[in-house]
Length: 116
Image (cartoon, rainbow, N blue to C red; front, top):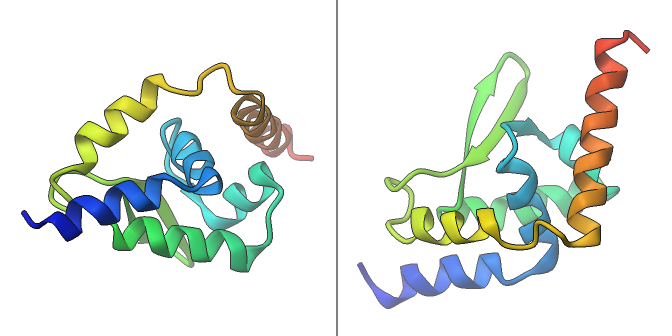
């Protein structure tokens, strides 16, 4: 692998909003609307961050009906992603913003489950 592949992964994971997205995707596969609601960010902002993460090989997507679901990438995307994502899994668990994002995601899912 080249230095540029390594650099792309690290640069993509260095931005706080993208780390928040990665932390959410560490919980489960999500579509853009869920990420937007959990992070309280606009569609273009979230989509832009997802594009950078995908280009760096840190996330992958798949179509399910009319939705595109995003998940953490596997080694085929970027050979550095498994190690980087494994480190990130244990990091920032006590961060106030990351915890708030996850609480909003859980609340959204509970709301959907109750039919509200």
